Image 1 (tube, rainbow, N blue to C red):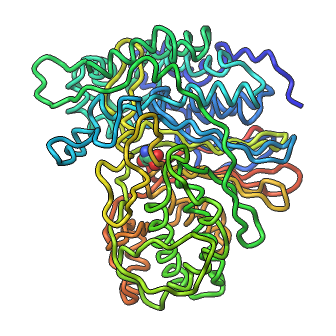
Image 2: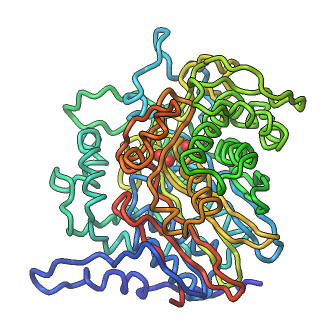
Amino acid sequence: MFRRSQLVLTATVAGLLCAALTAPPAQATPKPPSKDPVAVGTGGAVASVDPYATEIGLQVLRRGGNAVDAAIAAAAALGVTEPYSAGIGGGGFFVFYDAATGEVETIDGRETAPALMDEDAFVENGVPIPFAEAVTSGLSVGVPGTPATWALALDRWGSITLREALRPAAQLARRGFVVDETFRQQTEANAARFADFTSTRELFLPGGEPPEVGSVLRNRDLARTYGLLGHYGVDFLYDGRLAAEIVATVIDPPVAPGATRVVRPGLMRLPDLAAYQALFREPTQVAYRGLDVFGMAPPSSGGSTVGEALNILENFDLAGLDRVQALHRYLEATALAFADRNRYVGDPAYVDVPLAELLSQAFADERACLIAPTAAPKPVPPGSPDGVYVPCAPAAAVGSGATAAGSTTHLTTWDRWGNVVAYTLTIEQTGGSGIVVPDRGFLLNNELTDFNFTPTQGTAPDPNLPEPGKRPRSSMSPTIVLDEGQPVLALGSPGGSMIITTVLQTLLNRLDFGMTLPDAVAAPRASQRNTPTVSAEPAFIAQWGPALEALGHAFTSVPEIGAVTAIERQDDAGRLLAVAEPVRRGGGDAGVVEP
Ligand code: GLU
């Protein structure tokens, strides 16, 4: 149904985007494209954290491309303007609703551990190495999955070539983008470690300093790299010259002379890159309030944990309850679902994940009866997803295994034919490993720090220990909701393990609490991941804290949780509502083809 269009995105997109940048009149301050967190219209839609990426996705749709084409082109643009969260040095999960077949399909583009990585990789002299040292190291770099994801998605569902999909982003990289407050802040936060790598400081600390807000940052190396990937295909990265350069960088990171940082070498070798495959996986699926919610299966814990929590909450009439009572159930449900996630979910090639049971309504019903009128002491123990369900077994505390938040980005696209993409991609921490591949313009991930460094207390056997070739457990939760087979909502978020609660809370806001999608996205967030305190935004604590504390919940304030993008179908005539964050992460950008 999609014609293989001759999509030649030459000067137009970048020309339009960068009109203010090319040959500006003397003293003129270049302006970034405008951002809008909400857009309504027809002909397709794109929502991302970044106006350049959204605009490039929309241009692809306008020129006849489909949702997959637009998603890859926009993701490539994020590699330019959000290089600390996304890019070809990382991985992600791609969820696709195919209007032609009515099926939801997914691609697992998760990074893998090298063959030399064993269970003790992050342990020295019997103790785990400091997390920060693991992050900024060659050791944490997993084999990137993003290039293979793009190639596989385009090959299977796209209507343009990889070269065509990368061209607008290459042009953006060449011409440059206007640095905004968020980019500046993220660079500042990373400046010390970026300065310790010659390649990274050259790219992201021009003149030795984080770039000024309003200045133009160009990445000609990345423009060339995209050009080479378009020309030679992703084998250039997995099996060609770039593979050798990645391995050389990981084994011997380009530490700046005089830097005193301990930078451990990596274990990745050429055969690890050559063996990498992005994988098609069956989506997870649960029914909730008469809708079908599809998500990402292991090695992401997103689909199973969001799904289990929804199944638990199906036991309660959240819409009919007082909001404090409803939020109490939300917090307790996610604690239970996280206990099960931590105990049972890992890379299914290495771990026997009881996925069908974790997603069964009967298991969730057993778990739901553990929700008491007041908060249970955390952490709560995992349940037994064994097919035999007895109600209300007593609780005993165990270790939590909740992971720290890193950085990531989610984008959502929807085309005029009704194809939908929810795509979350990451390089793990903001700035990944901090190591740019010299002269190639992109950061390498630190995704292998998503493994548990040592067995988590109370979760033996721990499903998320490092192993050769294994994919670390993720929390990424790209989600598509169908109503009688038709897509009605697609969404996702960054936020480490808080991704799961962010997606869930947005779903509850929209489906149970009757908020509009913009309100559902903007509403203050709280995240209970089976830890003694609930992480929550100040506005959530101000509004709901005292009433929930009276029920036994305790709060830890965190400035910001997640950064959702979402698109919702408004009617059968193809009217779409695209939504990005109004404030978090500096605000995102939503757009439609025909407003
Ligand atoms: N690496 C994390 C995961 O896969 C995502 C990091 C983040 O979103 O901050 O779960």
